[in-house]
Image 1 (spheres, rainbow, N blue to C red):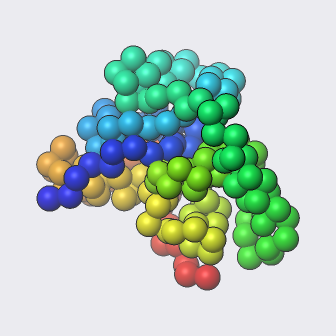
Image 2 (image 1 turned 180 degrees about the vertical axis):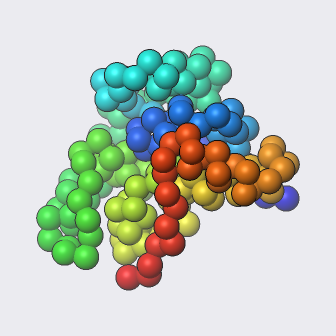
Length: 171
């Protein structure tokens, strides 16, 4: 049986999806610590997402990452910006996600993201095993015994979040 993910960064949009998921409690069972930034609160207006964010903070599953303590990480963020401008194989993604990815690379913590562009970037410039999508997380929840049927989870996830999983082609 595999161990749960100990520490990771989490894409703010991943939070938004999981806040709508009826089995959202699986996230706290599979992950022990997800680092977020204090400015995440500015990104959300939906009460469901804000409530989920607060609950996860109260449980200690989400922890505010103090980026001021890691000024060197901004070099990674700047490098990602530069790469996205020049490498035509990549699709674009916004500054909030670039910052999360840059800090994940700097700290060598995995990142939870369903964003195709983040997965593509990791395959080309980092390590694709360091980017976990919801499918992988749900599969791990079943392996760890927190849920019984992957098909049931995937159906519920699609219904609740409208997220469609695709197989990522290799570059």
